[in-house]
Length: 124
Image (cartoon, rainbow, N blue to C red; front, side, top):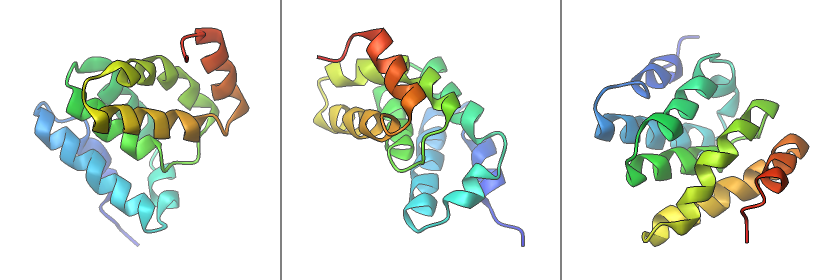
């Protein structure tokens, strides 16, 4: 059965920031409705979300990426995202801070991610 998840993961790589945000929000809805397997089955999902966090300076895009991560089952690869989530905790936007906290709480369910947070030693 074909679904739109792989196409939406490709949209995460769009040049347009608002398009990337929208794609992350749509994928969060997909996961919220119990279809995480569709996203996990798409090999590019991780690198696409990682790029969202690491290549843009837009807080709203980071917030959208963090919101998506906050509903995912964390994998070992997610530990690399910790360093990009921690700065959200210092943002002026309460939405950004809350998304960052939720994502870090979610990632902390994975031992590798938890070790990455402790190594970062930045969480106060």
